[in-house]
Image (tube, rainbow, N blue to C red; front, side, top):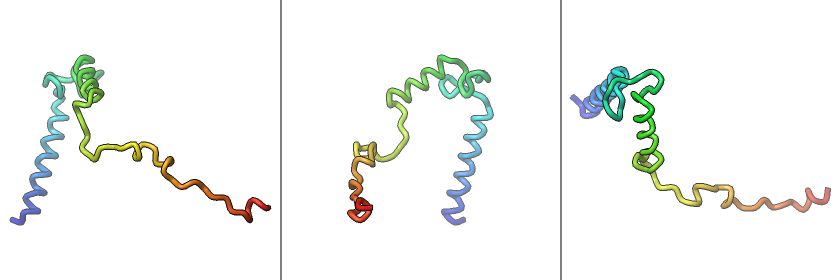
Length: 89
């Protein structure tokens, strides 16, 4: 078996496991059954704990750190120059 094929099979297995966990309806915070009004959580408490972790930076999406230059790209664009022919019209 080729290494690429085994990697594809492993990815499919992981995807299936993730879908099964979502379908099982367990809270990601405390593993109790979910309630439809708070899904995917079981309660407002678990939802608030998760939100707090995101807001405090405990959960992070991988990537390069953002710099000030990334925040305001328009500030680094050259100023528009006026064409003297257009201003004479």
